[in-house]
Image (tube, rainbow, N blue to C red):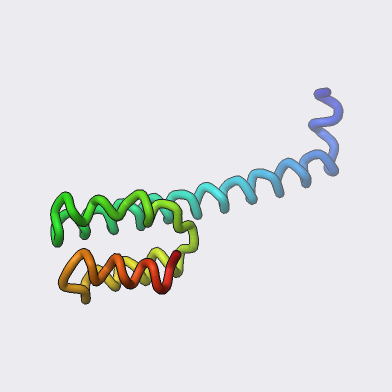
Length: 91
């Protein structure tokens, strides 16, 4: 095994795997950051009623959609408005 690990072929495959893993980790971290920001915004603006939308929002994995939801929270006046936007555009 030690001899295999020293081969250039093994090193290249291992390096590419690490890079992919880092990219996935960064993406996962960015999603978690967006979920946290959305959750905080919902709680600040709408209290517990806003937090009831998190199970729906947490199913969305597309970063652009999550960013759009975060922006929508700024413009809506009620939880019902946000829920309507979510059901129309994101679910």
